[in-house]
Length: 79
Image (cartoon, helix red, strand yellow):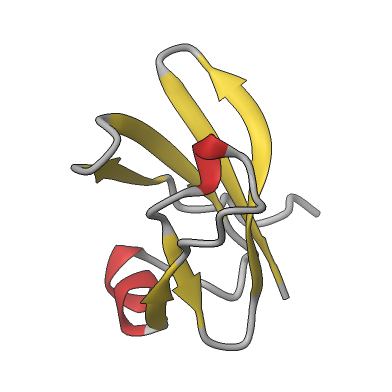
């Protein structure tokens, strides 16, 4: 049996100029669902620059740095 295809959710961080692909659990079904979970913005100065300014999601760990894919930083969230 094939596993479901994860939606590709992209973002743009105006403060840093970075583009991102969000690697999210399958429980986040689309961009609207992703938006509904945002409870804040990551501004932890002890974390790497690539993580600054990305959303914090209710009930999920992250944002976490998951490398680069072309011009995008990959930001991961885990349940």
